[in-house]
Length: 375
Image 1 (cartoon, rainbow, N blue to C red):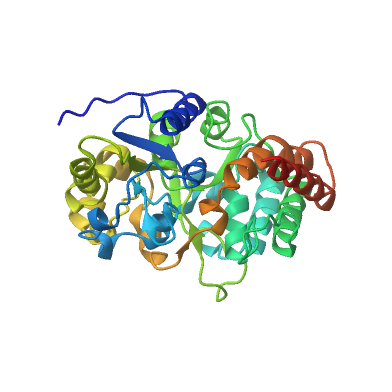
Image 2 (tube, helix red, strand yellow):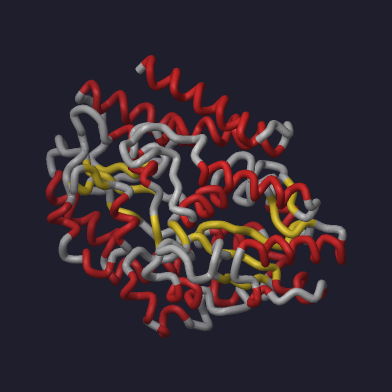
């Protein structure tokens, strides 16, 4: 078996894959499907191979919530590449100059208060309010035990938890210390210069943002610390953080060498040997947590990510290892549409156009209800 790699634009790849699976022709043997699109391939006659048996040799050390994203009816169809643990990236140098110790920030109220103080001292923004992504929204929602859908799978955008989260972020924005950013989120080429120049001091992002700092925000070397994200109340809730972004490697079950491909890709994605390279080369948090305690790996002074950040990147991961959650909506076929609505309409309405949170959620609920009725 020979592996031939091919890269395609995001929407083009997922659309072509969908057409290939429906027609039964032209599908690749192996494919990486983005988290936000994966539920669309979990309906009807599923063309992906069940991977439970291939996963079993590694299961004990794999973050379960990451496997759950690619699971339906206890059958697993995707192999995660990393966890994408949501963490806080603090510009430690800028915060110190403003008299702020990031280590004292444990809950969201302290995060907000630190932002206000920072803005008063510097006149610059503490952190951004997202309009084209839901990294912070999803995190805060999961911490509250909320979701985009209810336990019966019905769309529930106007829930108490969702309203509270967006109202809280709106309150952060109204202090003047938090603002929207070009590109709508930290992981965007339009946003990188604003962090590199110190216009914004903090990011709440998945751990894989380490690679963006090293590659695109190089002026901040040894100035940025990685820490655990704030929670609502320090002693409440089982979910302290969630995984964000990423792809699931799937095997097309009609492929000629599907079983062999499943075994090979399970090794590549999940084994300790491969996961060491996920950190060494990519700077991502490995999904196999057995390597998280390998200090020869996680504290290697020659590693470019160790060299960049001002503290040990794996320290916050170890603290939240057993409290990484998931939104139920991630596994629901409605999620691609929900994600699209929030990132193109809902968040812009609230944070750019000033629409009332309750009204914006009501509009998006009605829009998606109508979309799902037509399907």
